[in-house]
Length: 237
Length: 294
Image (tube, rainbow over all chains, first blue to last red; front, side, top):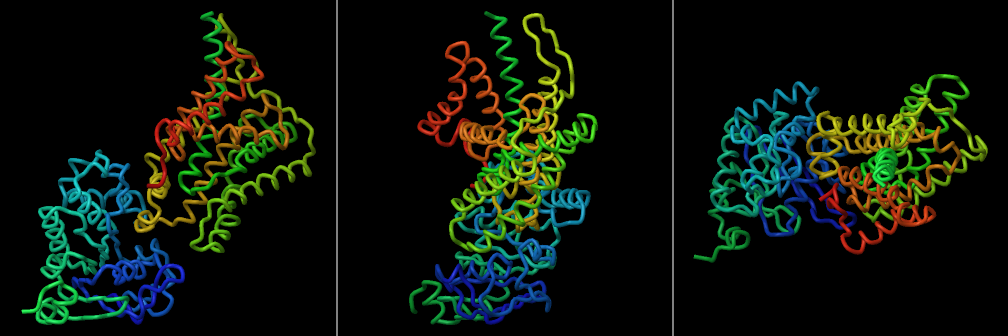
C-alpha cells in the first residue's frame, strides 16, 4: 500500500534520513521504532508531504506522493496524527471533528461523517461543545485519531500516540488502534513505547542514525539479541 | 455634564466602529499569516477612491460605492499573498521571514500611496454623505452618516464573526491561525487560506474607507495614520486576538473621545500610543492575551 524506497530527507540542509526503505501492506500495522534522533518522525513527515525528500520515492498504491502537499495527500486516503495530537485546543470538540472532514466534498458530507464519529465515540458526542484542550491527555489523543477518521482514510500515520500519557490512557489509545485496524485501516506508527507497539504491530522497522537497522515481525525482533540489546535497552542473558 | 458625557460616549462609539473594522482586519491577517500588514491603510484609501469613482464619477448610489469598495479591495487583496508574500517565502526557505515581510508590506504601502498620487493626484476628494440629516437626541445630535458608519461596521464585523464561527472556510481560517501544520493534515490548502484571509482583512479596510469617505475626504495617505493607530489597538487587545481587537478599538476610541474633557484636543492622538506603550511595558500579551499560533 505505502512504499518508501531509498528516501533521504531532513530539515533545510541537515540530512536526517540517509536512505531508508519500508513498506506498509493492506490492513497492516507497522511499527517504527528506534532511538531518539533516528529519524522516525522525519520519515512520517516525509511520507505525508510535510518534508520534501532529497532523494528516493514515496508511493501510495503505486501513485507517487513526492511533490504533493499534506492537504493533497489527505485526499488520497492518508490520515496523519501528530505527536501531541495536533488538536486545535481553543476550538470545540465538534469544530475539531468538523475540520477532520474538511477534505470531504461538502459541509453536508462533513456533518454526516461527524455524526458517524459520534456514534463510534459517544464520549465526544456528550462533550461536543467543550474546548478540545480541556479534555484529558488520553481523550485528546483519541479525539485526534477520531478526527483523522472523518475522511475514512485507508492508511493512518501516527506519531507517538502514547507519548506523555499515563498507562491507563495508553491502553485506551491502543484499544482504539486495534479496533480501527480490525476495520481494515492500515497504520504506520512511530513509537517510543516499544512494548505497546510490539503488542499490536504485524511488522516492525527499526531505524538507527537515519538508516534501516531491522525489518521483521515482533517475534523476530524479540528473538534478535543484538536488536534487543541495542534498541530495546535490554541486558544480555 | 451628563449631556457632555453622553455626547462624547456616542462620538467614541461611532469612531470605535471604524477602528474595529480596520483593526480586526489587521489582527486577522497577523493571526493567520504572522504578517504585520503595513499597507492596510492604503486599502482603506483605495476603498475611498473606489467609492468616489462609483458615487461621484458614475453617479451610482452610496450602497453601490461601499459594496464596490469592499469587493474591489477584496479582489486586490486576493493577489497580495500569491504575488508578493508567497514568492518571498519560497526564496527565504527556512530563514526568518518576519522582518522581510514587514519591509515588503512597507514597500507595498509606499508603492500604493505613490500610485494613488500619480493616478488621482493629491487633491482632497469629496464624497457626498450616503445618508443626510441628523438624529436629534435632545442632549446631542448625531449625523445619519456617522450612524450609518456604525451600523454597517457592526453588520460587517458580525458577518465576519459568523463566518469564522460557522462557515467551513471560516473554521479553516481559525484552524490555520492556531496550528498551520495540523490544518494541513485536515486537508486545508494553506496558500488558499492565506490569500482569502488577506483579502477579507483588506476588504474590511476598503469598506471602511468607503464608509468614511464622506467624513474624512479621500487622498492618498488618508489611511496611513489609521494603520499606525491600529497597531496600538492590536497591541492593546493582544496580537492576533480578534475579540481583543474589537474591545480595544472601543476602549481607545472612547478614551480619545473622553480625553478632550481633561486634556487639550491636540493631545487626543497621543492617547492611543500612550496606552500602547504602557501596555507593552506592563502586559505585552495585551488585555485578552495573544491569539493566533501556539
